[in-house]
Image (cartoon, rainbow, N blue to C red; front, top):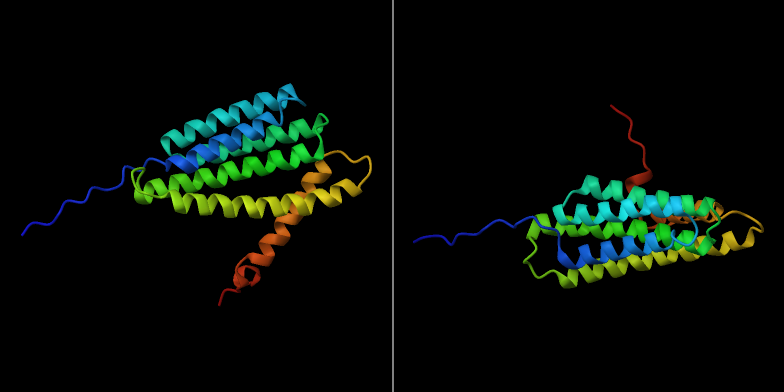
Length: 180
């Protein structure tokens, strides 16, 4: 009796999540273009790095790309971008990073040829829903502050994300363990 030969996964990132991530990086880029040429330049590099990272499956390069996208949005915020554009740009950057990491993880575990569309769609939908809630929570207070720069919106975004992380995170994440 011979055992069937099982080939390991090829390790290529999952196609659908990779496509979503690159499109989201493009959205983040497009929100910097009308406001800042410097921000658009930084975001362009981030977008290209995201595409490269997802073609080779490199998480570190993807994280660098996401940082470039967020930095581009922050520069646009400093140059007068509207609060909504800043919030959506940061959300798109973070979602690009999240979905890209998911694509790389699925690719390493199952390979590109595995049927993972359902898993990828559920992950993308859940990430988008949480991100949309965070943006909504951050947008309302940022509109109440008159004459504030859009960076105030980013502060509210971070506060809202932290509060949601505390609400849905594991219970033991706040506990402190002392060495014995």
